[in-house]
Amino acid sequence: MEGRIIVITSGKGGVGKTTATASIGTALAMEGRRVAVVDMDIGLRNLDVMMGLENRIVFNIVDAVHGRCQLRQAAIRDRRIKNLFLIPASQSDNKNVLTPEDMIRFCKKLRSAFDFVLMDCPAGIEQGFENTVAGADDAIVICTPEVASVRDADRVIGLLYARSITPRLVINRIIPDMVENGDMLSHDDVLDVLSIDLIGLVQMDDRVIVATNTGTPLILQKDSAAGEAFQRIAKRLNGQYDLPIIVPIPSKSIWKTIGTRFGIRK
Amino acid sequence: MINGIFRKLMKSGGKSGSKNVAKQRLKFALIYDRLEVSDDTLNNLNRDVIEVISRYFEIDKEAFKLDIQRYDDVSALVVNTPIIATKHKNKLNL
Ligand SMILES: Nc1ncnc2c1ncn2[C@@H]1O[C@H](COP(=O)(O)OP(=O)(O)OP(=O)(O)O)[C@@H](O)[C@H]1O
Ligand SMILES: [Mg+2]
View 1 (tube, rainbow over the protein chains, first blue to last red):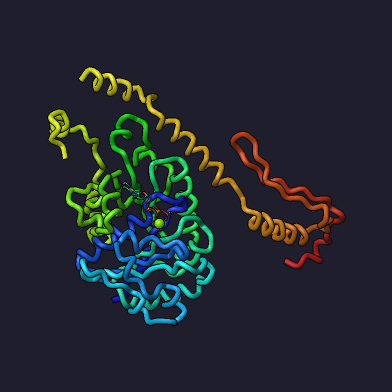
View 2 (spheres, chains in turn cyan, blue):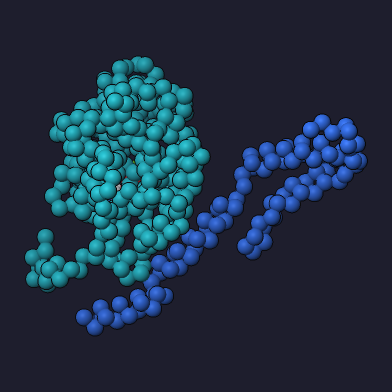
């Protein structure tokens, strides 16, 4: 069976595309699928560090697309997680070394080699975006509950529809206490203004930073609310379409409050 | 506790918190964004409209003007063209 190529994009920078690509990719591999995560941020690679694979890069996507190496040589196998591969960006080129036509051809190869290919799109809607969406089957748009981010998401959603791709939305970096106090847009507020279906809600979580510090997958961190949310997104992509979307809840449940009082909260 | 109840009351008022401001601003920003027309679109439209009108009228293509005008909350497409002559009916190549 042919694999699916899913673009992770946002328009605005710094909203969690790379975090989402690494986490959803890892979770899909743990579901037993053969997965490649591809860093499309040519010239500013990032996904390798997020995945803790930065010391194992020999070839990169530009080498593979231009035929300087085989696909399997550019795909770095993750030694901790079975069936997970990273295709890194090149750090020395700029974004126009690749063209949309190159990518359409390359995506055909990727589809026959993997069940899921997640592409980490660079911020913006220029050449890097064009290259990334050229060969894609599906898209996940990431935004945070902030005006600028939702607005850019709207723009990107429009561009994806224009290419006959129906994207789904992840809202990341939700702070439930602020939502409850009326100081942060809720997911309903965001969905009110965007014409898109939701595929996951991810809350702000310190564990994300711990995971990036050490280069260990967020999914393997104990008690990570964000990690669990990404895992559920992966399950939905993998066919569990009716797995409910959990709305992050404020931290001041009674037990946690007591825990904090007595200083026993970890 | 009292604090919590107070906050709940404030919330049910619906106006507290900065997110209402955020949502309002977001709505307006999106309305404006969606009304915006790119130069490309405008140029293509310009070309097509001249083509269609030229089937019926002889017009001064140099003086032809097509504009998007915006008022407070409506946006209008305004076409302005001097007509030199009406084309004769049976010469219309439709
Ligand atoms: N749920 C979260 N909780 C806490 N921090 C997060 C969360 N998601 C992302 N971050 C942090 O936000 C920052 C930006 O994340 P990330 O690099 O994934 O964004 P990006 O969209 O890939 O950025 P860029 O546009 O620069 O490629 C990082 O420091 C990351 O650790
Ligand atoms: Mg990134």
